[in-house]
Every structure is written in structure tokens, then in C-alpha cells.
Length: 245
Image (cartoon, rainbow, N blue to C red; front, side, top):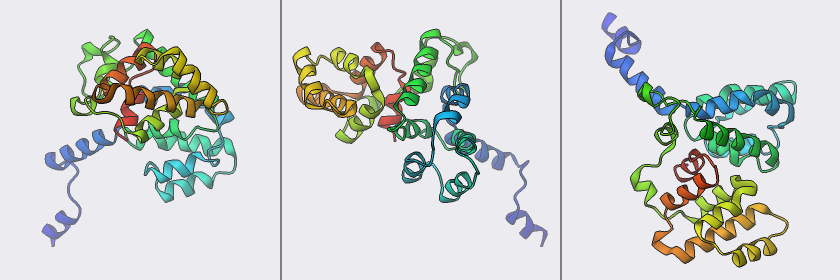
């Protein structure tokens, strides 16, 4: 009977069990930089964001939140409390949660820009926190962001799909033109992208990104795109979330 109980209720102090649990927790961890951004803007988000309007549905659709978590959030009595509840849950929902959250802010573009600006500021000032397990010598250095957010080689060599470029376009905001110009899209082509999509910044950005991909062919890699994002001051974690979602 004791042996049976041991199998049903494994000892949490068992080194093997503890090791497995730690590895699982590490895989599920959100990037520390993203956690800090959400914490820094917690008050602003809770005062302006209506999470039930498109945000929760996308987070559920993409597997970031479970049905039970959505119900718990919606059970809160006010919009502010619902947002705070989401911000409590989100950091525990894995490395993709932040990127999907950004995509969910289509109707709150000014908040998405605040989040992206906070990422840029942390990148430029060198205050980005090293991920768990990184050497302490990397903390606060310019290479911290690359360690936390760099793309694996096999992903960096890929040509982004239209779906991935669409996701990226949805979070670029007004920076899309700077990115497109660095990618080599001509001023005339940028003008056409703007003129053909006067009502939607995202569609204009996507048109420019697709034009770049068509013109560069196999050279239109995620690595090249990442270089232009950095040149525009956009945190490279944004592309990681897009490519690895």
C-alpha cells in the first residue's frame, strides 16, 4: 500500500521529480523583459484596456488562456479588475503569451505602442533583464537582448510566411515605414503602399513587407528582417514571437 501511495503521490523532494518540474517551469516561463514591461505599464493598462473586447477571445483562440481562465477573468466585477486579473495570469502562460497579447490589441493601438516603446527603451538603455540561467555577466549588457530574444539559426534562415508577416505588420505601428526603408523598399513603393491602404496602417505595412519578400526571394530571411527591426529601435523579441508562435 505504501508503494502504491508513493507512485500516486511522488515525493516533491525527489531530485528527479524536482528536476523535471524545474525544466517544465522554465519552458513555460515568459521572457523576463516582457514580464517587466507588463509590470511597468500595469496601471495604465488596467485603466484603459477592455479585455473582453477582442483580447480574451484571441488569447483563448491561440491557446494562451484556457476556457477556465477566461471564465475566471470575466467573472470579475469591473473592467479594471478583469484587466488586472489577466495581467496576473499572463506572465505564467509561456514565452508566446506576450506576442499574442500584442496582436490582440488591434483596437487599442496606443497601448500596443506604449508596450513596444517600453521594450525599445529597455533595449536602448541596456536595462533588459537576462533570462533565467543566463550568466550574470550578461545582465545589463547590450548582448542581453540577443540572449533573451535571439532567433535560433534554423528559424533565422527561414523566409517568413505571409501569415507571419501579417502578424508582424499588426504590431509595427507607425514604425513600419522605417523598417521597410531599411529593408530596401523604395520611396515610390512606400508611397503606393500608403496610397492603396489609407484606412489601415497594418495593411500598408503588410503590403510593404510582402513587396520586400517578393523582391528578395530566398534572401528575404527572418535574420535580415530582424536587422531592420533593430535599426528601427524595435525589440527583437517582437520577431521571435511572430516567427515562433
